[in-house]
Amino acid sequence: MEIGVPKETKDQEFRVGLSPSSVRVLRENGHDVFVQSEAGTGAGFTDEDYSMAGAEIVSTQDAVWNRELVVKVKEPLVSEYKFLQKGQLLFTYLHLAADRKLTEHLIDCGICAIAYETVEQPGANKLPLLTPMSIIAGRLAVQFGARFLERQQGGKGVLLGGVPGVKPGKVVILGGGVVGTEAARIAVGMGAAVQILDVSVERLSYLETLFGSRVELLYSNSAHIEAAVKEADLLIGAVLVLGRKAPILVSRELVKQMHSGSVIVDVAVDQGGCVETLHPTSHTNPVYIDEGVVHYGVPNMPGAVPWTATQALNNSTLPYVVQLANLGIKALDVNPALAKGLNVQNGRLVHPAVQEVFPDLVS
Ligand SMILES: NC(=O)c1ccc[n+]([C@@H]2O[C@H](COP(=O)([O-])OP(=O)(O)OC[C@H]3O[C@@H](n4cnc5c(N)ncnc54)[C@H](O)[C@@H]3O)[C@@H](O)[C@H]2O)c1
Image (cartoon, rainbow, N blue to C red):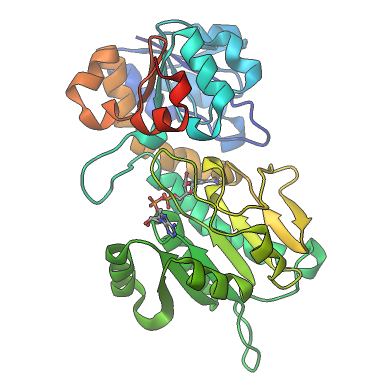
């Protein structure tokens, strides 16, 4: 099969769909891989690295997109819509529940779109292609939060770890899944006071085995959220209801009650965000101030660490890419986890959760 790997076009997105070592595996499986020139530069991979791995370097978007299978990182942007083709396989993050325009276009153009974030395995590691990026985003949430708490960055000037004699900063995490757990791990490591709120009692019990009494674990309801958020120096949004828009858990009224210069990092922004006052931002302009609170809402946080993120993503996506390349669309018949990733096929919206968000687009 011919596989295209475009250079990402989203603002400050330096990750790339396939690393050179992944290209080599695909070549070993007998496939032809076409990589857009400089697609991997931002992640630390040169065109020469790709050539050595057996890829053909192409210079135009047309040449890279005109392939049976396209492997990307982020959803196609409007400027890329013209390259999507009927019958083509697209394997990338899509987050359609938060993007009606793209959903409509994928339906109209007749492409077969498989979303990394809805590939779903039974068992503990349920979302194998979201997990590696969630680990990174969770860890970065505290790193960025700590930076924007600095006075010169607009924050209230709190050192998360405190110092002997001065209390540490308070980190409140809404959602104790992968993002929330990794954020807590880093916040605890920095010496912050940490609270996690989750609606899953089972998950809270697991977190207790992980953190013991070092993290305060609370059931997520409006009373607990209100009490915790008002006192937070750093609020991290990390909720997910699979395939759906994130629920709004923090109203504008509640943000008003936060201390001036506090920071909100809403990692769930890619599913619409769980804070009423938050809108998506970019790596170029990552924050804005509303109600006196610093808001960070970058939907592609792992793009900040593309060297780590590309390799982490490829470690998880490659087995699925190989299967798609070997079997084409039939890979969905033999791999139920991959089949769950199917969002749009032959002009039809097929993912149940996205169908619920856009019932009028279901045919
Ligand atoms: N911005 C980025 O760059 C980036 C990167 C990776 C992941 N994400 C996003 O981060 C979010 C979290 O991802 P994840 O991998 O941790 O998901 P996850 O499924 O592992 O965890 C989500 C958690 O939210 C909890 N939850 C659901 N409703 C809740 C509520 N009302 N109150 C409190 N908790 C609630 C669930 O019980 C679960 O434990 C997703 O929206 C994901 O797309 C964003």
